Amino acid sequence: MTSLHQYISVIGCFQGCVLFGLLITDSRVTTASKLLGVHCLVIGLYLLLPFVTTLEGSSLSWLASLGFFIPLCFGPLLFLYCRCAVSSDRLRVLDLIHLAPLLFGYAFNADTLWFDSDGFRAWIVGARPPNLRVWLSEYLLFAVALFYFAKTIKLINDFQEQARKTVSSFNPNVFKWLWTLVLGLSFVWLAKAIMAFGSFASPFMFTFSDAVIVLFIYLIALAHWRNPTLFAVKELGGSESVLHKAELKEAPEERGLLDDETRANLYELVTQCVEEQALYRNSKLTLASLADTCGLATHHLSEILNQHSGRNFNQFINTYRVEFVCERLRESASENFLDLAVEAGFSSKSTFNTMFKKLKGLTPTQYRKQLDRV
Image 1: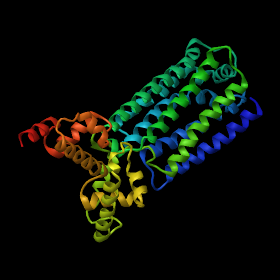
Image 2 (image 1 turned 180 degrees about the vertical axis):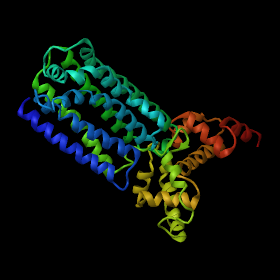
Image 3 (image 1 turned 90 degrees about the vertical axis):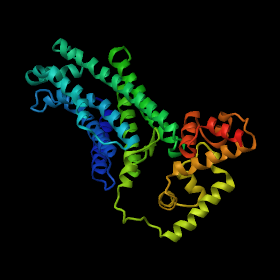
Image 4 (image 1 turned 60 degrees about the horizontal axis):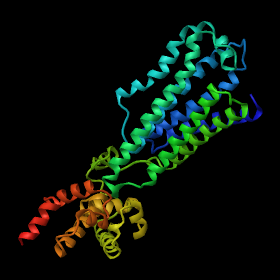
């Protein structure tokens, strides 16, 4: 173990424990925060593995064999974190199934871990595996990582497709960051697999790969600590998220920070801003960008729309978009629906059709036929 690797391990372990404490004890803690905190903790503990492998004959040498299987929970934790961060979902009892790879790893090698921990430790640092099951365990680590990376990629892709149907309610950068996180870690794990099973292994490459993994996770942890709903998408598939539903269940007497008159005046300001600049025609418009344009705080704008107009941001903006399409159809009923939808700010035909039917009670085709009869 090189001195550089020792420094990275010590710093990484310390930071992992600190971030765990910050994310778990923060007053704004969410399920995703807790999962990310646990992820930081287990990474920190795993980084101690190079140290305990040097404890030959020590009463603590068994820690090396236990620490070897910790990465079996990296994939499940990343998957659960992404799911809870995007959808503000909670953990369910069924999620305990994701502990299966870790428990299987220990159970599969229980006799070796208990009776031959020194042999297991020696194998970790380069000796021959004490038996076939121990040798297969290394393949198990990468197989589980590959399986969960595939699940996480599918999860993010599915959420992104759903979010596109409610284009007004999310920041596209949310998914850019998630793709960066997952794909970056995928490449690191691929590099570690090549080193483990190929002829490219070197102390520098092992040190570098560990440093990249620590950097990725800890940067996301710090960003998430600063903003616990960093990756939250307020609506998915046209339905409100768990987080938004929880907000709606607050006590009715909690009316927000603004009085009725102030909300009414600011609502006029917002509508004037949206109408004069035709902001609704921007398909990438978000609550945050609209608030910034109007010179308001995001939480104030959300309060104004919900409590004064009785509509959330998505409904507010899509009402303008549908009215834009209707006005154009009244001017020329022969115009192409898809062209009008894109010009109005919709990003997909399905979203346009859904919102049009919801707001007008008719499909676009039925509305056009009604105009023809007038």
